[in-house]
Length: 406
Ligand SMILES: Cc1cc2nc3c(=O)[nH]c(=O)nc-3n(C[C@H](O)[C@H](O)[C@H](O)COP(=O)(O)OP(=O)(O)OC[C@H]3O[C@@H](n4cnc5c(N)ncnc54)[C@H](O)[C@@H]3O)c2cc1C
Image 1 (cartoon, protein in one colour):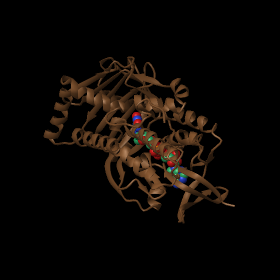
Image 2: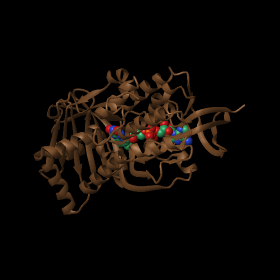
Image 3: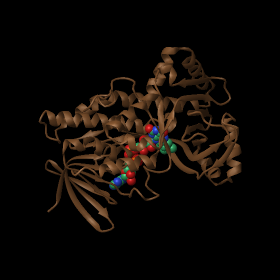
């Protein structure tokens, strides 16, 4: 007999695994489908990247009861320093200005994955199917029948609600014929860990240059994650050059704020593009995380936004079940979109406008960006808005973000 679940989540990456943890207390029967095992080096969601988590993400992860596990490997961000290469405008945001202990934390994606999957293993109502890949699905009356492929062959399972958390190139999205808006920035992020001569003092640096942003996120006293963004056609050159040559370029582009770079670790590349699903739901189907919207990593917002979507969807599912709605009632998904669309639009517009202003060769746009940074530093209201956005608490937010339970 074919196995039937209330909910199937395709994609056990950061967003899919968080969502499974968030809805587990409903006691729905849930299957989490993931094509690449956690321990594999090719696991795309849980690699050695440093991910900057906003305080709203910390709050959600606390609710999911995984923060204590993550916290031991997390580094607090106390200051954010933003500058524009070749211009004098810069802005400096500090935790003390907002009277908060920190502006966020940096965690290594792999340790986040371990914490989430450790938590998932405690829920009896969650079945993790991995490594196994979604190949196809078809609608059968009010259910969806999924065809999954693993090394052992094909398996078919049914579900009442299908959630696509399968990343930017989502199979769920393409099988559902959901169209996308796409913009290829023709930029590639090269990520590596570096040890610097001077301690980073828990400061996250972001420097905008004509070829993209350079970010340094603190992961230890003298160790930071370096995200160097460049034009995609130049990426190979930067990836293949000897360490000492690459270090010289970074020191020139970033300046010597942290002194010399004493050690450079493995470089990994990530092509950058923007994807937005034209619709995020259909009957019995919803997209979440990168499959719904993939944003430029320039403001470190992608997972933070995805996690607030997790909080929103878990809230709407829990509320719907409390109102005796069936899990496949379309009202649950409509309410989810109503709850989340304003925040999603704000973050997408914010990331796109940073991308368009700072790397634009136009003198006017670049000067505007520069003026904006000066104003951010001089006008307290603007600075507070920027801080709120960075902290993921701007606008109306789901209950978990507001510190309430579901
Ligand atoms: C260089 C870089 C730096 C970043 N830094 C930050 C940051 O500091 N802060 C931040 O908030 N965000 C950051 N992001 C964004 C963040 O990485 C993404 O938002 C996040 O990974 C999205 O998670 P996801 O689970 O939606 O998708 P993914 O991480 O892509 O996970 C999708 C999962 O689905 C699985 N899958 C795919 N297809 C199938 C299938 N057919 N069947 C089964 N499983 C499937 C994949 O194996 C994968 O595990 C950064 C991104 C980049 C590129």
